[in-house]
Image (cartoon, rainbow, N blue to C red; front, side, top):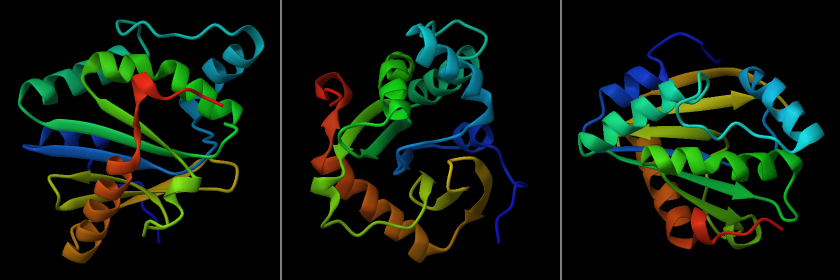
Length: 176
């Protein structure tokens, strides 16, 4: 059962003291807030990468404040190659994530084949709180769920570490 209640990502990051890691494993997301920007990018190639823009400023502030407090904010993406349009769009906008202080890495799906991974994307906060993200087949967010189950946290910690070790830093990863 998924839920849309509970703490927000911003609240969870604000309460973090050491680590906030995010593993993304889909090739397509249908996030409502990005729909217009994604469509415009497909049509024109233009993309908002201004960290002070209305869309980006709250995220940049949140991550910058966390990093300043000493929180390591990391994001890893497992992607198919050749990349989907959405992954190409994400790659192009990741400069803002890194500007804010996030470390981002990319892992092509093939080298991920031998990794033990959870069935859903997740955020893991301070190695103890998991926020699962649930998506429909076309990538629309259908809910999330918070877990403080130590075995779920351990699975996510180990999965993220394994992906991170194999993944390519954003500034070195070239989209195919």
